[in-house]
Length: 258
Image (cartoon, rainbow, N blue to C red; front, top):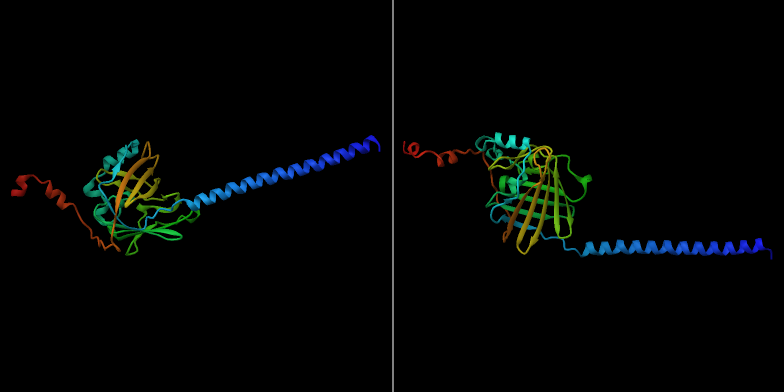
């Protein structure tokens, strides 16, 4: 057998070995990737989905972290007049934060297969939030009252689970008021994240507002709610109000005497 023939046989053998080694390496990579995917899936299955369902009530006041407003935010806050500009006077939710922060009213959370339903006793609001990514983001507001009026001040929302927490992301807000007591503003650029989790019979909510036109840094509020042993929420049946009681409370004594 000539040298050339021997080289061809040798190269052919090496080629077969290389193909075998290549296939073996590819199989190892595929097996490793499949293992990673399976372990990830098992971890997700094993993660405890939070049990948020039930009726809750604010426990103590909502607290807020440092507020750093932009010049526009400061101007809007300075122009705000509680006795004239609070949407609550007209049974309109000023913002999602305002609704979460209202004391002595019930909030019912229902976890469905494809969505989260939140019923607020305050203003008889009903919020329907689909589970999924931006492809399921509603075109219109996610919140209406029982009469069918929708409120863009509450934004359009989607939700997802991350481990033992529920994350709600909202956008497409109308201008509103985050903190009506001191006129912290909300604009149509505002994006919010609500992170909810449960420890025992306490529901925690971390509510983050992002809006570079209004805030130098994200504005964050924290809430705690206690679980109630109740089956349903009542009707609020809001009617338009005013702040006459506020003015009377702060009237000079001589005016009251008169």
